[in-house]
Length: 307
Image 1 (cartoon, rainbow, N blue to C red):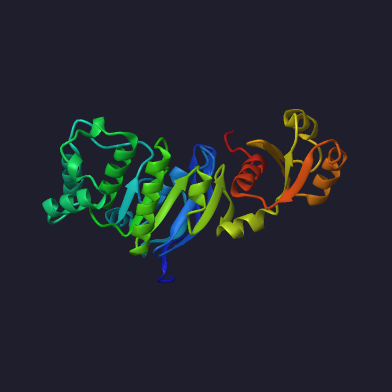
Image 2 (image 1 turned 90 degrees about the horizontal axis):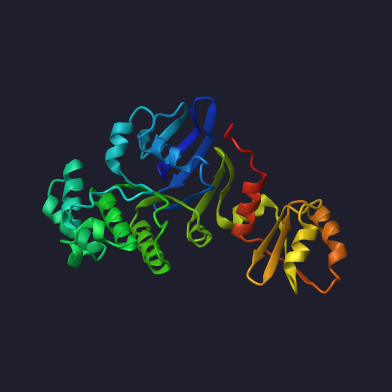
């Protein structure tokens, strides 16, 4: 195994009944990297995370997590991973400090008092140590959850949509902390729906309905998709959208503020379909496709695995 790889797995598969929710996924995440894991709801992201940290048994696959066989040595992996779930999962009738002490006990942290104090200080929660967790705002609950994940000093953080439901300021502060942790050598695998967060990751993977559709840096993902996008401005854009939606080569027509983004992966067909509308009082300009354009395209062309 490459010593620089914290996660190095391939062929990871999970079925529930006849439905394959994770289909032959391969992933490599380097030490100190922030790796974004993106995809629509129900795409298999959470299932994949749970298999990585030993909470769910895969049906297929091989490889390592933290240098350990991710299937046979899951008990040891659990000790070295911090996992933050989508839903706040700590005791709301305990104080901030009591929750942290409880988690420290679970992980068998040697000097619990010192570890709790360090966690409180690291994320600015000293003054809230006696506050009941249930009375915290979404942003402060997020900080508590992250503190609990870090209290046993893990080597890998698995964060499952950690910023859902928090305000923009709290999201930015959270990401600043994540980058500081990565700068200190911690590896982070994070799921998110926010494109601005995806752009803050070192590398990305996009999964839809259990299948990996694209991976690499932001530039890599944009290049792999081969998406052509035009920005359109003018009056009554909603009428234009109705006319061009569904034409050959037009895969998506999406409102972006006071403009439309019209995109497709077959540049020639797209151009031919929009040509008749280019001199009708609308201003057309070809632009670089953004991550949101790309991910909508990937989602629209992916095959649903529900049945």
